[in-house]
Image (spheres, rainbow, N blue to C red):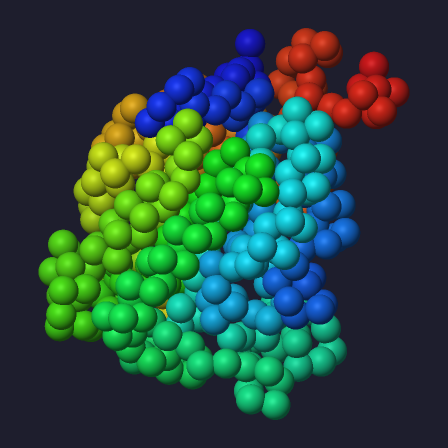
Length: 369
């Protein structure tokens, strides 16, 4: 029996939690496809996420959905800061469910990394990397501190009032996610975006209660978790994605991540996804499964939680090895799923899963039988 294709439960404070049909997770991946620039998901998002649900994933995450318009990475990002967006997500969630997958939404705020050009290979300004200028529809960004570490326009340092308002935005987005029918929320605290900016000394040089010591730098993250957990139904699990390591001395390191994971678990987070880096130019090693040790460190810190590994996990046997060795409880598949929306179904067949247990849409039975 393949462990990758055994069910797994994501715990919640109340009730049985959420059972996934298998341990494959579609990683959140920005699509930069909201051409109306209003944050409302549309047919592309249904086709993209729906295909992966039909392809056999146990849990399908949306791209980063901004909790405020100011928190979008680009003006083509999807959001969940208003009811129109929540209503547009609802039929997408319904279709994901119809294919046997659970539906997750990643809540996000880009902070200092907001208001940038969409990362698309277009022969226009939209294909450039960098801050949007005023004529291109850019907006003022905020973060824990003024900084040029990202090579973008410096953000304004957030006031106490802006921090409080931001935390309320996360909670309001959680309520809309519930109204849209999502099964799990993942808080985006990785890749150099707002929460990670508070966590990392590389981007946070505040001298008040949100900067300096580990306790102060993690305060914003803890307050976001607390607010989201209070707004999110107790029978639904709460997840978080963390950059496990900044890969530079003086930054946020894996020991910090393991320590914080235990604190987040105590606040009600029961699922962790481990990526890395995102603060400026700092990058670590690369290669197949290079971030798996980060997931293992968090798994050791919170053995009761569901911990998934992500990052160049492309081969089914590689994914199976991550699980059977106890390095993690699940795998998040990104680029490989862009190439093949049926990655889980193909992987299951390669791993010798009995035909009747291979997760594929009934309409595609000819390809599997």
